[in-house]
Amino acid sequence: MIPSIQLPSQKYKRKVTAFSLVIIVVSTACIYMDFNPLGFFTEFHFVRDLLGEMMPPNFNVLWSSSSVGFSFLQTMSMAFLGTLYGGVIAITIAFLAANNTMPARVVRMIARAALSLLRVIPALVVILIFVIAVGLGSFAGVLTLVVITVGTFGKLFTEIIENTENPPSEAIYSAGASRVQVIRYSVIPQILPSFVANLLYAFDVNVRAAIGLGIFGGGGIGFQLYLSLRVLHYQDAMAYICFIILLVISVEKLSDYLRRKILNDGKF
Image (tube, rainbow, N blue to C red; front, side):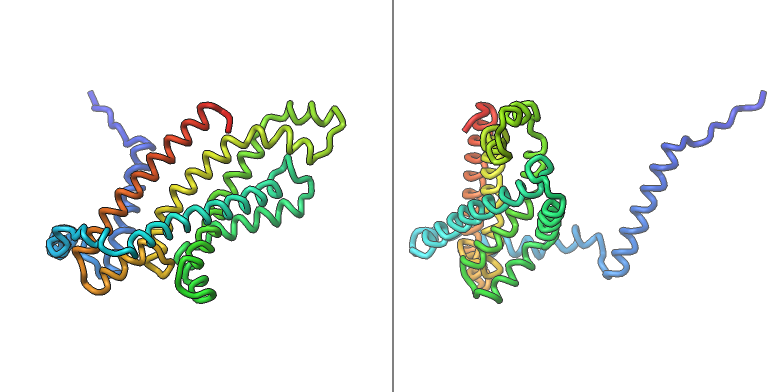
């Protein structure tokens, strides 16, 4: 009796091919960059030595200087203003880009192109442009957060508007209402809870972004962290890092609670 030969399945061949391609790409990148993957394990003592210099954190720096409290308020103000102005602009452009609120196809195309352009520009490029244009400080950070918010949430707001239910709008249209009245009494009541919930999420994201932007000249607590690292005050830097972690976790928990409250109630 001749034994049957079982050939590999097509699914198995696809997996082997994909795995082989990944190995080839990773190996080529490591060779091109002259990078040794074992460095993750053999060179870790540099990170260990740095952490040793950062311990214990000098928490006295958090309340011994008034600049820390000012930097904290500056960071929160940057995130709030960036979310507020960016959210207003994003919502406005979203109404111009949505099919059910803007009948003019040319306007929709321009609005969608603007959102796509803002979405692909990296945040670090934006902050460098504004630092050159308006100088170091929180104003450059706010402008950057506005651009980030519009680019990140403009398309999301457009999809929320387009996913509204049509029967309420058609009922108002049949009563002789104008397009503006339909938007006011049909579209906005449907999208308002989602808009507010997403703006709370945007604020959560912008708090983290404001801290990162501060390192590149945007001001706030991130700039204080950058200064402490620059002058080799590593224990002060560790205190700032602990404070930043606590701040981010607190804002995230508060944002999650408010979003769940708004979305579950379905009203604002």
